Image (cartoon, rainbow, N blue to C red; front, side, top):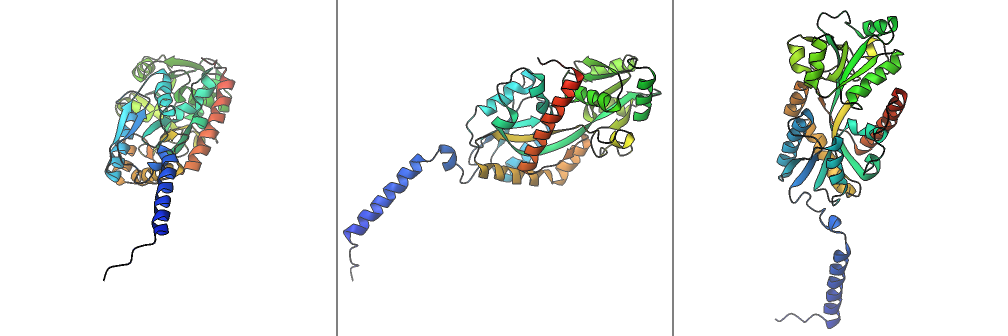
Length: 334
């Protein structure tokens, strides 16, 4: 038996509804239409520093795990220059669709206080996704130095104000500002000596030209293992996993002192929240993998993720913190 024909008005209604749905879809932003099945194509992670550094190496490990997890490539794109400004600005200017991300680091939170003008605002123009690694500095002295602890350093500085010095690389870096914060909280007068590279800094210490240095553990691995220099303290809130016998500055007589740098992922500010949430969940899961944890420990880091809101709050705290340190140290904006 032949089925009855549908009434003409029903066909017209379906046709109109279909046309309306198509028109509404056309009005949706491309980013919104692309959210389903994200990511559906390769994702670029802009690293605003050169290849081969610790930040680059650790982000490559995370990118590989994200590639495995999503079945889409997460590609590292190194864009160094202008203290990270070139790379970060390229992400800020990109389409906010989740396919261009930025590796950001703790050092960027001081940039607003160090530069007269920047083409972007870290808090306004980027949405943080998650931290990926956290790591403190090492405060070290030459092997055989009488400065064997934080208490020794403070006592020597107070006994002869201005005589003691500390070395670090790059004025305005976390290493430099960590030293300035130490001076301020300890109430001591110590001369800061800047260096361009860590090898130059270590050489100066071995020659007796630098009394105390502030640097990341990974950059000092060789001299520490060869016992040319000695770690007297670390600057994070917890002891470094690979230096369990070295106390933190806070437990060595300066309670409240903390300098913990970090790396993390961020996206352009207008990136859809569900894409940000998808990435946050994936990054946090990847960082919990045993091989990522052990690799981070090897470099003196902690692989740790966080919520988007916690990351935002951390950035805001550190922007305010470093502004005070820069002002107290009398560092002029470039």
